[in-house]
Image (cartoon, rainbow, N blue to C red; front, side, top):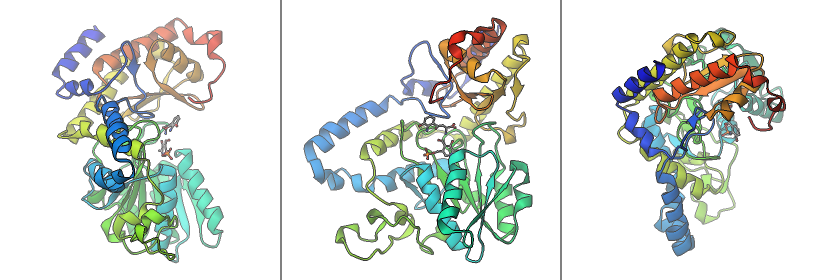
Length: 411
Ligand SMILES: Cc1ncc(COP(=O)(O)O)c(C=O)c1O
Ligand SMILES: Nc1c(O)cccc1C(=O)C[C@H](N)C(=O)O
């Protein structure tokens, strides 16, 4: 019954043909695109061509003749429309972690006289670690960290907050912030807003310019499908460009790197946020992966993401064996990202039993099983199979098997 309904929904889904653009293994239900996106079929050929025709043939001349040197900028421009950014504000480089350091320091410099970075309790650890690392590096007189729960961030703003750092979609619960409202609250308090888009870019439309966001970072290897370790991206609103320097003053952020001058002079615009030599292999991979988004209506992508999570939530609710699971994902569409998070004291073992069934999910301590729905390639049949498998694991207590007792290092 649920499979018939799923098949009907897949037949009616205008985005269903996009799944063909991905190399998904047979017999697997992949629901971990919020951690590592699936492989777009265009990527291997592009990597092979880069190795054979570019590096293999043209060697160092490739920096110019194959445009390697401009790739961070060009890939940034391809990402820009996905996050609602007009040109010349997005650069593809480094990891989110490294980019956070650059942008938090930028924010402090843009708000002299203010010393506090406001962070959300329970945000992804790197956001917190980097903030505290920067504060320790600068010393208490120049930088302090304040933490507030997600629903109290606006209340925690005061005239010492230089920047509010928030992640649009929480990695544990899948709860989505109202970016427009929180950005406005930060501005009303005289602070800047720095958004982490790791769990939103590529899964739903993001409206950085329209929300008046100041700074942002995002991930290349999740919903953008750039491959393991794909470079991240950063966004600096045009009004904040060329005003301050960022601290990682590497040679490729220099105004004229090939002058090899002794004195650092920052490049204009977002280019000063580049530090060292980019990974061209990784950029070529992400560049090819982004082609899947060409011509896609992001509102339709969002509608599918919500339909998939609704369908999965309803299927789980209909399974008596799933009663012991606590749904952490908000029911309200406005507050939902593109994942469903279910809590259970035996969450780790349940996730492992699902993976053994070919339903690839992940676990986040202490008790959360995450089902990530990538609307580009996940189907309603995937959602149905995951719900059935979950019910089957719980009904048969298959997660209690001895082999699921030891935790793996990477989950
Ligand atoms: C919300 C969030 N921010 C940052 C990161 C880390 O990004 P990176 O590995 O590029 O530093 C992740 C995932 O790894 C994440 O989920
Ligand atoms: N980047 C990862 C990795 O190298 C290994 C395992 C997981 C990851 C992740 O990206 C985790 C992810 N940010 C999360 O939402 O939990």
